Length: 220
Image (cartoon, rainbow, N blue to C red):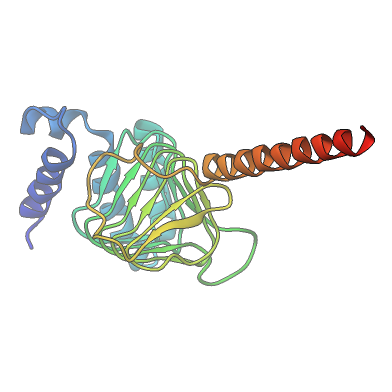
């Protein structure tokens, strides 16, 4: 695919994902996520040819202007969309598939000083919401969602929704997860657990009340 067709494809994804986009000119000039992706492709070109210094300079200049840090060694597929990208960090050995969407504050990082593959693999059609951290050499399966603020340190199967700290799968093998922006409409396992505890507490209170009544009757 030619460079201009690829750039147009990137901009078309913006119109699909962001209802605020109004014109190609506006998207071309003002969307920092696009600028970061385009800069990364240039940096990655030099990185593959072992021109590491030039590649890092390009990536750092891009980081300065966009607020998005993508290591030039990361492998990124087609139609990648970064929305409100400030604070996004993508590590050197990350592998990102096609049709992936991530939001501001997302980290695709490592867990220490280990060598080799130390960053996540993100499969096709994944959505990673605001502030989520996906850490280590793990895999997020196709069509999965990672909720806002989640910290994911284990593999996630395809067609799942993950929320919480640490991240837990709360939806699996349901209907296909769509690439929409309703990432605020996710289950809350912590709140659900509190509800369960509240129910148990109410039941225990009722049992204690019955025991007190029996003891009072026995005393009488």
